[in-house]
Length: 191
Image 1 (cartoon, one colour):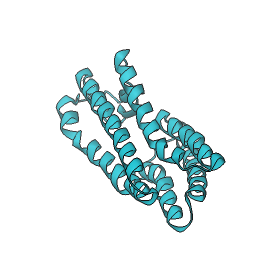
Image 2 (image 1 turned 60 degrees about the vertical axis):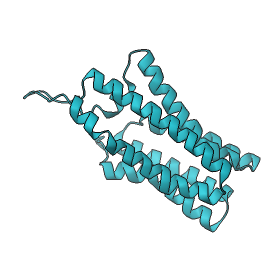
Image 3 (image 1 turned 90 degrees about the vertical axis):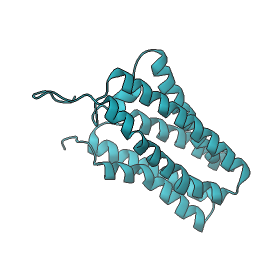
Image 4 (image 1 turned 90 degrees about the horizontal axis):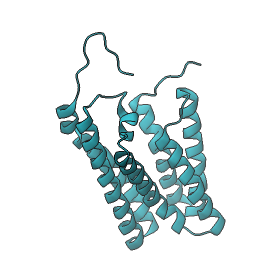
């Protein structure tokens, strides 16, 4: 099978599907069964994405590893704390990786998005900083919600709050992307 990129809709379904499954199972059973199903759904999503694209994105690999570790701890220790802090850990890892890339003058976010658009170096730098701050804000928000509300409210926040916030934040970057976009010259192709 020839590797190809998944459509944005298919990629979104693979990324959100396990969370939707977790929320649905949580409403019907308990957090430990929901966590096991979530881990299985993540494994299926990652495997399918790899099968179709013949590659695993760094963000997907990190997310999957953290889900396996913290989901496993949740089930093994029978303590829902681990699944609730998992998003905080993922957000902090992403913020740290992106900030580390800036510190070493490597635009790691460019590696993720350069197939979608081309920016000048200032654009990549600004976009990276914005995502760093967004991930830090999302880590703080997750901490506030899980510490102050029920498990069901936290799960609902993840699905109906954090996911839409991420989409809205990404869309809000359009003016920056348009301002710093580099037009391709005829005959030039994006790598």
